[in-house]
Structures are given as structure tokens and as C-alpha cells.
Image (cartoon, rainbow, N blue to C red; front, top):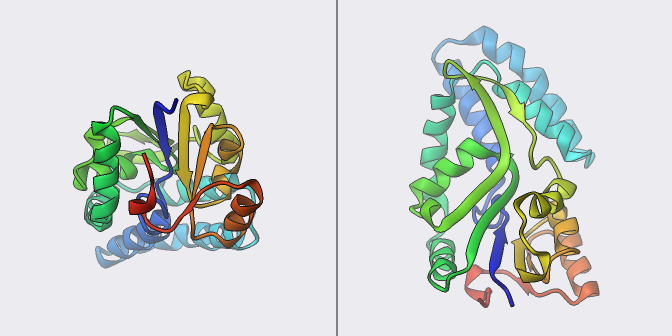
Length: 221
């Protein structure tokens, strides 16, 4: 019997790769306010992160580049950008989360993104209160300034291990997500659901007879 739902965030609840939006917006915000040296010093991390992403490197290395990029920025600047992005979470996705909550499922977010921006986007969309907890990579902050990150969910293995950390029974869990970062989780839980954007994941889903959806309206709870 399914009691828990684990949601991916990027390209699942949120129809975009949010870090790819957050980073340029923070960069140009800094540039517009004359923080030239900060922008120059962060440019290499953008290039390295993009290169690692293109060659499909271990996502943990990509997350380290993102943390290096954000270091020295004010957390409130990032949260302001995240607040505006949260408005882009589709209404049908919000309604599906509410439906799961009303049916007494325990909702969790497992994401390889950054915890604070994700929570702010969910809060802006009005659905943070429907989640039991949100688990991603928490930005470390000192005196309001980002100093690095604590990597709790850096990759597919991290998502699988989070089940054990939280004491969530895989046999009672539905997981929904779009990419390979869900693969180990999908292989573990009772009901994996592939949100059909990633071509390779769709092929894997078809091979394993996992449900594939292209809209949250299709997710049967």
C-alpha cells in the first residue's frame, strides 16, 4: 500500500532546470549593481559547470561548481530570484500535490538542487505546507553570505540513501521524476513513475514496464 510520495523538483514539479535560470539571474543582478570583480571571479565556475553538465559528469562535481559560484553572494538575493521563479510552477502540479496531501499521502521532495531556493519556490506556489520535508543540497550561510554547500542529495545514490536516512519504507513509496538522477530511487521503490521528458529514461521505463506520464493530470493516486 502506497503511503509516501517522493517528488523530484526540476523538470517535474518545476518545468525547468532551475539552477540554469538562478545562476544567470544572480550573475546579471550582481553585474547590474557594479559587482564586476565578483562576476569575473565566478565566470570560470559557470564554464566548468556547463562543461561537466555537457559531458554528463558525476552530478556531485557539478553541484560543487554551483556552490563555488554562489559563494560570496547574499542568500537574500538568491531567495528573491527564487521567489519570482516559484510563480512558474504550473497550476496542475500544485493541484496534484494538494490532492496527494488530502488523500493523506506523505509528500517529500528529493532534489539535487539547492534547498533554500526550492523551499522558497514551493512557498511562493503555496504548496510548501503540503510537504512533510524537502531534501536537497543546503547552502551554508554565515552572516547572510553564502559560503558553500552541504551535499545531502548530490546524485541518484543520494536520493536512494535518503529513503533509509528518513526511515521511509520503499515498499510503501511512489517516486516521480524525469531523469537519470532518479534511477536508483526508481529501482528501489514500489511504484516508480517517469515524467516523460528525458528520452533515455523513457526507454528505461518502457523496458522495465514503469508508468510514463507527460502531465501531472495523468498521475493516478
